[in-house]
Image (cartoon, rainbow, N blue to C red; front, side):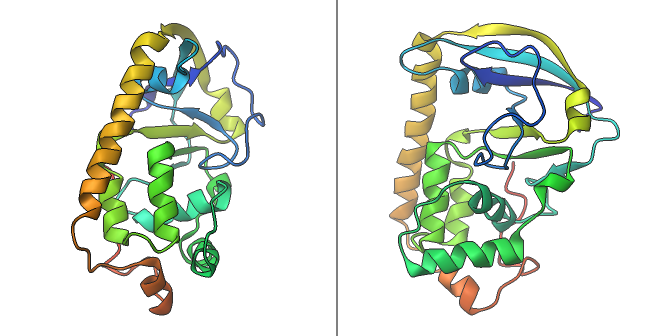
Length: 230
């Protein structure tokens, strides 16, 4: 990561002064300020079908920040999903899913609050559905890893600590027009879902969450996909 980076925060309002401690605790990586390095993605995330939004622009000095990059080869796809199931509200449809949630947190979980900055996939509606299917034993870990690439739904950078907030500088905003960016957001999501259902037509003899639990599989197992970011 470069020392000085430009970040965008998609929102229905202008956010000149991001405040440490605000937000929702049940976001992907817990409490934090959620951004992206892609202005277009920020604009897609900012709009709904009914209203325009704003891509707030910031510079962040990352020197001296303790950074967790969940999309690096140091981590597996299950580290990402373990963080997700700890913070997001999942539909626990089966006893397998209840055990899966606990197993993932216990064996693959990471204390995200120990970091200043986190990079990882953003659980858009489609990504969230894929993760939910996995913990309900509906898709294999190999299919989950492949699904994370579908539609290029985007990475996010989350500012977690008070120290990181202090190094964030507001630079302005750009309008995100709903007529353009809601269409682009829907098209991206639709493409991801189309590719996902095509993938489900293929046979998969891979590891399902029930196999992982029964086998006592841990994070160092070579069968668990790493480096989920291209």
